[in-house]
Length: 291
Image 1 (cartoon, one colour):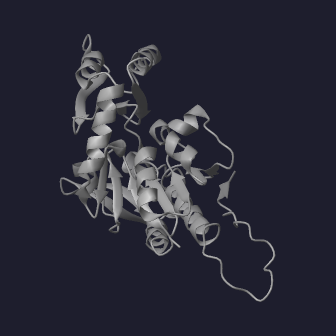
Image 2 (tube, helix red, strand yellow):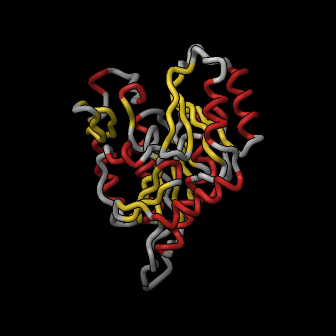
Image 3 (tube, one colour):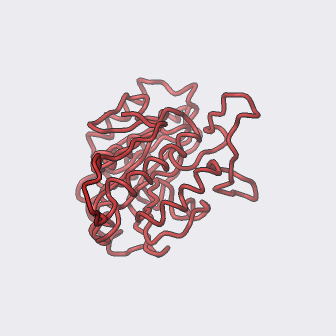
């Protein structure tokens, strides 16, 4: 029997920038941190030391699949244990032992061409009238666009208008921190994760994420986890059985890994022969997580 898949979003779910740590207590009570990403010779992202230990333990019980909107180059900066599969570019790229799967990429691009307006139209809409709250606009491997925005100046009506315009043309809008993503509807994390599950013959899925782009992944999961922050928290997202961390920020990443490990060892564990019934077989919930 195969192990379950644990599909985990990266930024603000598993790893955290200094701005996203949410360390609001006394300094001496802060958790011990480890650097998870270095950029231009400086630390950029972190997780708690306990989270790093849980991550390594999880590898013995599940197929860990990092899932991110980052490009391949951006993902390569993140220092995680090696995994057979990883998903970047919001599902547009499926890495197998670090090598992009060309057949998967071709399937995704074909679906985008059939169902979404060209990316050039979206770029033109983002830059129309040179909005002052848009700092710069980039593309991710020619699949989707994202803008760095000033949240303090970003008008809600402009964002709503962009979201509606994009939806009519087969695109999805997601605001995560200072990054505003415009992604074709066919480019999804959940489609890529489903492909991995088929390949490994997974017996179940544990998934975690904090943004609108993670919602489909959480809907697919047998065990769905999200932190008490982010786009889904702001939207009040829920689903039957969803577990939400008690903490916000970097401590939430630790809670998510603990719950994922408990699920992998409990709900999806291989049945062990016993001389007598063991009583309650339900998953023991972490005291730090609640439904």
